[in-house]
Image 1 (tube, helix red, strand yellow):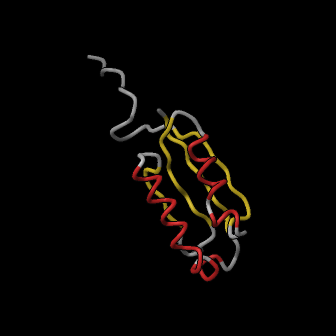
Image 2: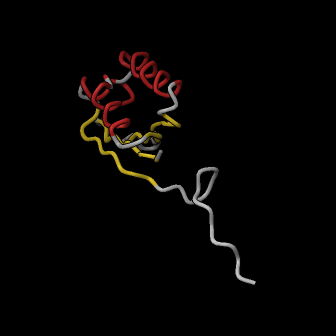
Image 3: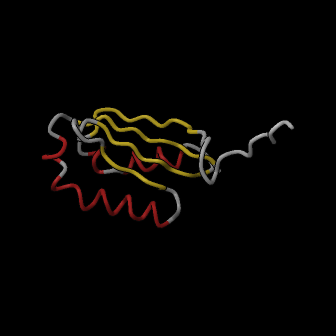
Length: 102
């Protein structure tokens, strides 16, 4: 299992245009979270120009499938999306560090 970050670049009037689509988008996200795929996600503020979501899965397809089925993408609010593998260095899933030298 690994982590994969999904980035969205969004339209200039994203906050206004997302209102009628928000409930369906949040349901998709809640369902992915309940399955253990979506760890966390949210939009950047000031400016509200990007979205970041962290997924956990066997490969990047978990995040790619989310994007392909997201109404924010299919309805044109997202101008570009990208999935990148993410290596956790600090936190519960960080790799064990080498023991300190005496």
